[in-house]
Length: 347
Image (cartoon, rainbow, N blue to C red; front, side, top):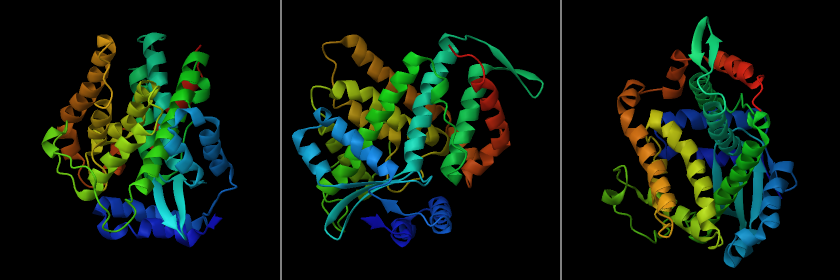
């Protein structure tokens, strides 16, 4: 079954009436891009087939109910750089639509975390010459990746694959984390279908007290449904391996938490990623392993500290926040820095 260009455009135009001005600006850019490139989606595309293969090859990772529901659902991968995913019912067919942009963002962030660890642990305080100034390699690498990621979110272009240069161990760990993140994303969208979130006026099954959230925010119905979907998705993973999936899910949400650290929670449909992260982490207790439990809490607290610590910076960039970050480092300069660092020996 083919999803036409007009249908993909409608996914974004339907959201416009509820969007904030900044969201609307980005949505219109994506709508124009879909129309200009005549983007369509097919179940036979390599991206769609790849997502289906992840499900079929990892049956044991899902609960029986979740795997059965995924078998009944059409899974589309759309080769377009939009960082979005959607669940809908069209002509009585349940559909999950995942845009390539969100998959690339997940990969970029997961590879970045591994690469930053390599630079810290194996290369120490190595310096790199940038515009005649010696900079800490890890710090300037992190800044450049951030600028590239922000530009990719804004334009859907300029993706950089840094995974291939990782040492074998870190590359395999990153690939495993990316696969787990894709599984969680599929289950999250499946949850919206299972819980009837795509229906107008559908019920919200759990009430979330905003005072219990790590970062206080008032949740509307759409945001509460995202927390519901996270909870269902996590419970749809085989219970014997949920603890192993937790670090990958935290990394997956970390990509969004990282951007929100600088831009704040300007999304009317999703809670802050740090709040989603903390709610999922609370579903697992490592009571028999105090070190793991402490490590889990430290990760969440570090995300919280980073978010709160940069509140002044968020106030500075109030309008087109992504564009203003080019004042710190241009996109071309960021790509140049990444190119220099990637051509060095990481092994």
